[in-house]
Image (cartoon, rainbow over all chains, first blue to last red; front, side, top):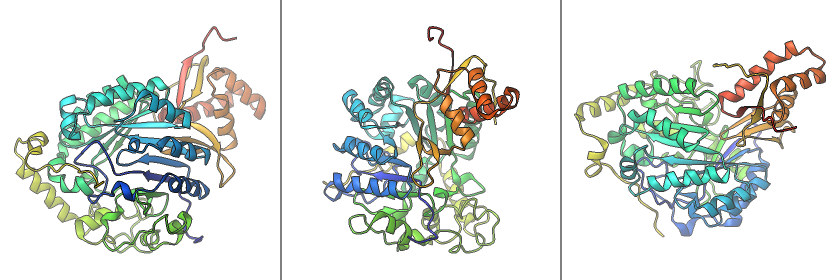
Length: 372
Length: 102
């Protein structure tokens, strides 16, 4: 094993790209993997065991919708036996009482359900399908089964002003953790960013509400507020560094440093069907390309924050500048910062009183499903 | 960090969504919870092991005092600080003692 490769801590297992929802900010790539190319049960089990042997402690079963896999219980059991903390990241559609009980029996540690809104009508428009009512029911089932619940909401211009109501909903559902995650603009969300991006005022107000709620609900509800980096002066420490703590395995077995790394042209991802996971992590070109600080150009190379934010996000650099190896334009020191500022200004001018819901019929692009 | 006092007769209990396990790589105990891990030093491990919901804070402090041969006055602030770190992540339930228990 490459001596300079750090120990990985978490694995995102994207077991399928199939999903009953069509959220326009989906974190899946715009080119989806079809069912016939998905890894099989035994292949996934091997991935989970290899990950645990490498030191990984957490596995998030994600997708698409992981409940679409009928072997999910078997995969959870394999992960748990290997010593992994197992988290189900789900829309919750398909989570019946019997399925929840089977997953708990398999050793599932925690469930994270996404909500699109606190309001049924808005939630269903964003999801592109009638889902909100079923989510409320599934959340109730999760708590009844005795599984810990995290509620996750992706924030954007249409729901960010409902933060107080969303926090109340989390309490009503008996969630122990609430993730308020501002949309990260990759893949589908990048295509829809002009419609989704909140205003600076909306973000500032939401930040205050989240911060106050965190104090008020101390010891009762853990609140995580993921900042929108388009309005930040410093880039986010994306994945705590490329190839530093995290790996993603996509439905067909490609191993990626992050779920959206496929955005970067010219990176070749190795596959668990052909190589051991440990080799891919330690030796493959994709994982070593932006590992550590050696690859950094200025202003990162000489920056005192280079080991704090790791130069920000490689995918965002690629998306906004065409070059994955430059400083993330979310950093105020980036030579491309102006480009991001100009984009924000242009959409602020273009919008005068229209809403995401109005834009649905005209500009908003719904996530599609993979071919069979 | 926000801190709040924990009543001496309250019974702290580690949340069901967290669990302790031995780390394969280091051999050390770790507390795992959604998207996080806390490496437990011997004192932390001792504290977490006593947070079963069956002992009061006062009893936990007394047991730790006996184990480490230190006064309870010295231990109490350390334990409270540690428990508040867990509470900040909502990993600790602090409920009143259940009287019907022996």
